[in-house]
Length: 210
Ligand code: CDP
Image (cartoon, rainbow, N blue to C red; front, side, top):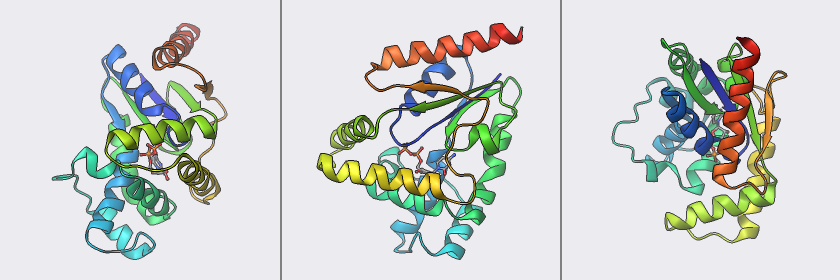
């Protein structure tokens, strides 16, 4: 079974997909890490995420060796990731990695922006996870704070809206729900409630297909 989980920044994709992967015993790929990895390699060597040719070169030879999760989770890397993600050559370079992961025997759970629309349009279950921009900004603010990065709510909300606009407005693989995706709004839901709803959707789809 292939499960695609897409949605905007801090909607709950990561938590939900990890929980689904564990529940169904499937491997999980956080595809945002790849874009963040490209952004991190560029920033840490003083190169600009806007430099399209260099970004594509980095994506083509991407190795995540030596990169810690904490290196990838900063707001600066997140913003730069969304810049490199609008670069078609970068997306193309990262496509096979994601596609091969999705097609492994037994299936997989992948979360990102374009899994249900581009990477794996034939996924068995597609979830589109969303939440209000205010709630997403609050969640990301808390997450960054736990990692030692202090950012005001206003600044976080502005970054959230800016990233939404860039991810939804790009020409190549823009963020949007696949036509056959199941919408899951996690505004006001606890982690447990959101995961329960996601599992219910997957079970309903499985039942309908069997
Ligand atoms: O964790 P968060 O929701 O902030 O973002 P992420 O999943 O780590 O992804 C970081 C950035 O990578 C996003 O803003 C997108 O621009 C890009 N991305 C993408 O374009 N396609 C994907 N499948 C995954 C991420």
